[in-house]
Image (cartoon, rainbow, N blue to C red; front, side, top):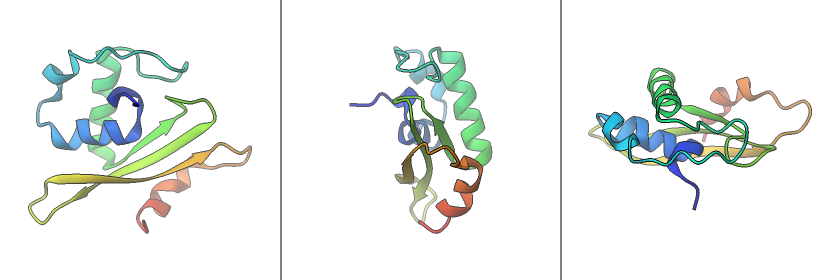
Length: 107
């Protein structure tokens, strides 16, 4: 199972399902899987803050080298995050991750 700290889906749930994630994140082990993995609580909290600002999260090979993801929350009528939807893709040479938020709106 992929840990919350190194997956785009996990970060969406940390950002949008837990009002104050700092205490919860202290219990995370933050095991690094690649050189891009957030490997400290401070890095995870920074990612959560950025995810909240953007409304989505981009995973740049944090769990598996060569795999990139973008994920956004799916909310119910009351604004509660109930699911996450995203795109997972291998990294080809000309892959432009910056265009993915536009594509994600259509998912």
